[in-house]
Each structure stands twice: as structure tokens, then as C-alpha cells.
Length: 211
Image (tube, rainbow, N blue to C red; front, top):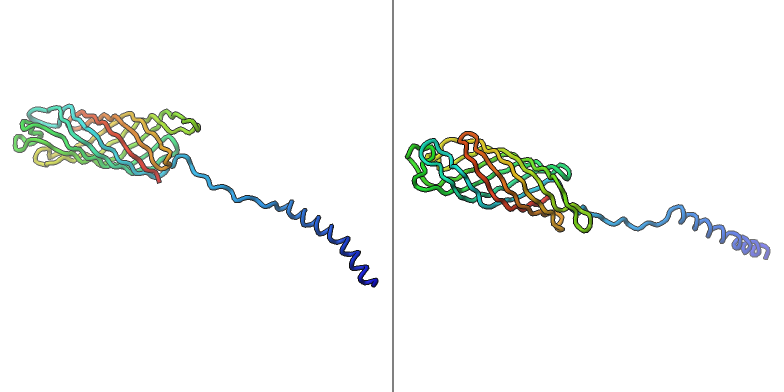
């Protein structure tokens, strides 16, 4: 009987102590909710973009004969990387197709005439100058300036056998959509072919995907 009484007394004294110990343990090591996964409102980094639109030459390249105003189309693909929010550096390939009349002989000396195309690989730098926030205070719309240079190859070779250096620059506007990886833009670009002194310009809508 004494043993049972002692066991009962021990239980009465030990249970509150154990309860306090468990409470202290839970307080020292509280159970935390799993942190919520967050995403960037705008993805930046490696990107791929496409551009396309009307392209014009004020004075088509030629060493003899007329140098007409030439209308055409241009398309460009670009792969690059965003350097923070403001700068982007990329590699591009630009292709254009321009119309010219039968009296346009380019640098062929009369051996060929008519339309011609251009292929230009090169490098480009884009700088976002001004950003405009949306209702959530996220800068989604930017006014930017883009500059670049490339090596221009013409076709047909008989019409324009010599390559040239293309330099270009122009302003644009880019909007980062709520689909985090995508942005759309529009750019007005002025261009210059160094050797021939040809001046041109293009109007280029764009679509970009950032990984």
C-alpha cells in the first residue's frame, strides 16, 4: 500500500512538470509554416527576341547610275542577356529585302539590276532610360535607346559584290507584360552603311522572351 501511495504521489507531482517541459520545448521550437514561394514580377536574364517590319533606304548603295529611295521589309532575331534592369547586350542577325527598279544597277556596272537583299550579323546594346510604374508600383513600361553595328552582306553578288559595315541607333518603347517572361515593344531605327554612305530607317515591332 505504501508503494502504491508513493507512486500516486509521484504521478501527481511529475505530470505538471512534464507538461511544463513540453510547453517550454514547443515555445523554444515553434512550428513554422512553410514559406510561400515567390516569383519576380519581371523575368530578366538570358533572352530571345524577334523583330520585323518595314525597312527603307533613302539612297540605295551604288557606284554608278541612280541611287533610288528603296522600300522593303526587315526581320531580326536576337539573343542576349539583361544586365540588371537598365542594360541589355545582344547578338543579332538581321535580314532585309529591298525593291529597286530595272534602272538600278548598284555596283555591277550594268551587268545586273533590280531588287536586292541584305544579311547582317552583329552586336547591339540597349539602355532603358526611363521607366513608368503600373498600379502595383512595378516598372513595366520603359523608353529605351538601342545602338549596334554589323557586317552587311548583299545578294545578288553580281549586283552588289562588296560587303559593308552597318551602324544603327534609335529610340523605342518596351512593355513587360504580366506574363512574366514576355515583353513587347516598338522601335524606330536609323541606319547608315559606312562604305556606300547609304542612309536608312526601319519601324520594328518586337516580341521578347526572357528565361
